[in-house]
Length: 218
Ligand code: S3P
Image (cartoon, rainbow, N blue to C red; front, side, top):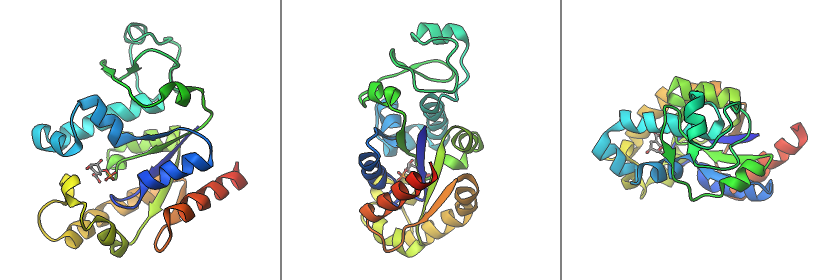
């Protein structure tokens, strides 16, 4: 079971995800970090050097690989040391993580643990669900939680962070957040299986609320 966290940049997906994985005693993965590892450069570098479309394509490939949603020909699977009968299901136990369409991803996170664990927490990027194929993968292959935050909270969290987020650089931060949010919020709400209001809550409170909801529902 993969628990995915979605929500706008700055809503706390990575910090809540890390804490949640401690509470649930399972591994944590951050999609952006895996993409950086795969690309060998930072997210801002990918945006500047390759463009947003290339970033979205990488994001989809990596997500497919992590959620077992990628469709690869059996020969590619075997080349990667993966049982060709493997499709959706747990992450592969050994060998490089295969990518849909070929290629191998170098790994530094503890994927062996992730493969052996019954549960993994995966923080998505704020725009991941805007690619319809990614939204479908997340909805069908994971349990998705939307960390909902007001523009006010996001402005506070992102005030000194815009440099790290290419889509927020330049212009007035609040206006940029409002514009992007108005295009995204319906997709977050439609795709998630659970919505948590995060305004005024600490990372610990949010993670505990999810963990509690999880244990009472599953
Ligand atoms: C993006 C969010 C970022 C990162 C990239 C694009 C977005 O992730 O994937 O800069 O489109 O909202 P965080 O939400 O973790 O900042």
